[in-house]
Length: 168
Image 1 (cartoon, rainbow, N blue to C red):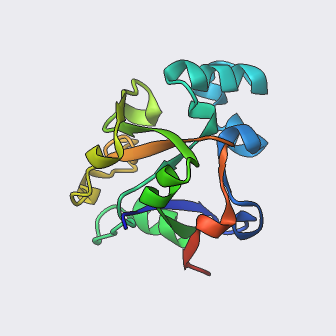
Image 2: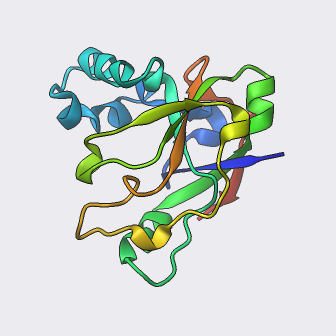
């Protein structure tokens, strides 16, 4: 069993409704408005899907929980303002909840200049992540942390697949 991890805001309905992709959550979808160059939800979803097929139905995940090592306090703030959920990626693929997997291993500050590579389940890299590279000052967070995007058949991971790792 290989576990992946996703952080969500403290106020959430994940255990009732599932872990939802941006296309199912207006607030999450609108976060991409600046990069999409529009505030129109349909245009934002279309922009997401132009980066790779199904991105609007995907969730971002990590191969390990954030490890704050006394470096940039941004990491500590991020973790303390969210709940961590985990799930068995092997089971999600076996049950056809996940259609495809993409890896994002680097981008420019603010999330621009993204590069996504489609990978197989076996190609997910569980090596330790370089949390020490994160820098609020330089605008580097997930741009320097390898993470994965799971394209979900129905745009969500149902609650029965999820485990709350940390409840505040």
